[in-house]
Length: 161
Image (cartoon, rainbow, N blue to C red; front, side, top):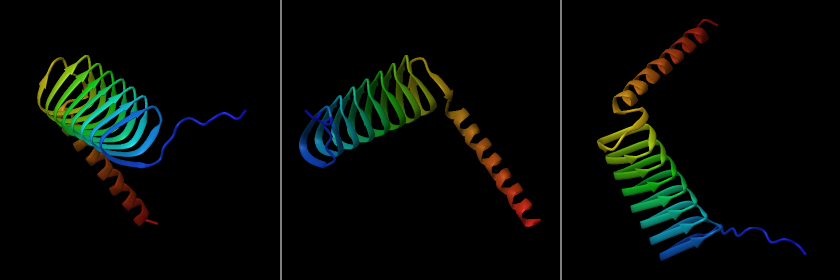
């Protein structure tokens, strides 16, 4: 007897309420989207809940994730509990035991969380960052100068040939 492949749906979904339990979906567009132990390329909804799942792009007014991984998320309010996010932008961010690469927010609350780059108007809780706002600006300035020098030297060397 042949084995069935795992559930995988590569479609676009546009509804008021979308629930995905397991499996994969290309795009979810809804008023309310809930993904449990699934994967989505893109989720766009007023309210998004992601539980033990993965998503590439997530956008919504209110985004909540638990035990999940997200490439990029944006919203008015984003809550993450024991999750990993590469890029995050929101007016208000609440992180609990989570890790973020780049976080940009008006207000950030962090509990046992860390960020590589943190740009926020107001930060609550103990902060563990590699670069804070000042460090991010200095790193960007230093990186820009270094890249400019490399390009300048490359042009000089190519011009001599």
